[in-house]
Figure (cartoon, each protein chain N blue to C red):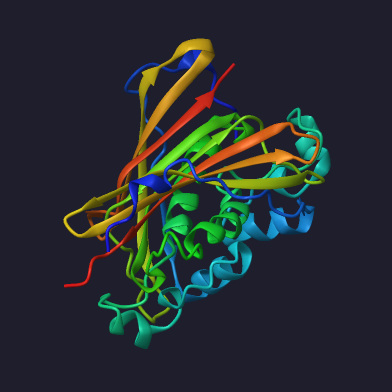
Length: 141
Length: 148
């Protein structure tokens, strides 16, 4: 993908919308890759016992998938100098082949000093916001 | 149980060295469903101006999870891990993490507060090379939901 250039960006510039699906298999894969083996991400019985609607995705899996929308737009993942998220609602992942849908929209919210821009993301699953804040600062040239 | 405000500023000894491997980075990128060659192909990474394959922006969670455990397991913090959920996460990158980095993680307690019976604990983890070059700073806010 062609890297976005600072000259092409203004406040309000929108990132391409990204839609992906998270299945139980994705949770297992992410658990192994990240080392986060919390049982609420793979065991329905325990998830329900602790009061959750079911098995939920790792917050950092959701955040990592959301960051993809930024790194692909920026063209270089190394351009991301700051990334912060606030988890507001769990992404429940059903035990079926379709899994949960995750939609990521983003827009340039501010032009900062030194060629840096702030991108604010809106991350939803089933129409509900799952991150109440998701914000990246990227250094463009 | 309310967290003791006196915990703020407490720091913990540095971790053992974690050597970042190309295969671990590729595994993590695959788990995010991200096909970017800069995570897998050293030639593609060099063409993008990096010394070796770099890690996705959230890869530092692998190290900060481990380093943050010393805080969660500190008996004087006394947080009930079975009631903990991840509230917030932030990564500030001083430069991208790349394969071959030998990183040391140092954890400290940045903030504590109790709101409506829920304990909120913010841990900062500084990742630096073993030679002391700062690489990434992470902030993790955990919420321990209060007993009803």
